[in-house]
Amino acid sequence: MPTSERQRGEVRELFSAARIAERVRELGREIGESHPTGELVLLSVLKGSFIFAADLARAIDRPLRVDFLGLSSYGGQTESTGVVQITSDLTKPIEGAHVVVVEDIIDTGLTMAYLLENLATRKPASVQVCAMLEKPSRARRQIRIDYKGFVIPDEFVVGYGLDYGERYRNLPFIGVLTPPGGA
Ligand code: IMP
Ligand code: MG
Image 1 (cartoon, rainbow, N blue to C red):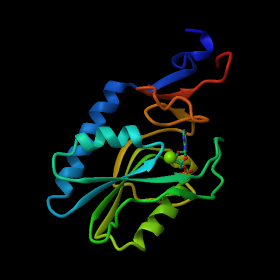
Image 2 (cartoon, protein in one colour):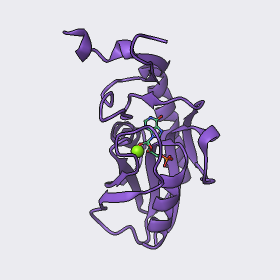
Image 3 (spheres, rainbow, N blue to C red):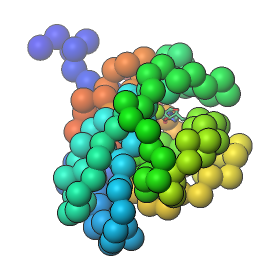
């Protein structure tokens, strides 16, 4: 394969696939145990959380519904614009349901703040947040993360669903993108 098509060499691993799998199993158990009754909806925020949500759903040992919401806040760059757009909406109402929002990463918190306000208007029984990663150093909104995978420093990460310009989502691990030529 030409070097330009290799991805792994461009990414310094932070969390291996095995470590992620172990953490996801723990989060799934926690979510199942804190929702003993009622309708549970796993709300996967696209696109970044699609891999995490797929693994998490299989780690939760109780009936649940999965739905997807497309949000876009970046437009291909690494800085938040603060402007959030719903690019595709839920397929069913969440009124009366216990919703767990599944996100790849909470960075500035602007996206999640917007989403939580929007969801509240739909009258769910409860809304909780499950994020694979948190980058607290960049927080501009205070978000309560009920289930958290890992806390990371202020570095741009890719893999396990996270992208840079739509690339790297398919890496099985999470790592830091290194500049071309190495650093
Ligand atoms: P926030 O609104 O700043 O919290 O950013 C939310 C979205 O930005 C996340 O759902 C990601 O899609 C994207 N994002 C933030 N930080 C990173 C990163 O380090 N790598 C890849 N995507 C990121
Ligand atoms: Mg995202």
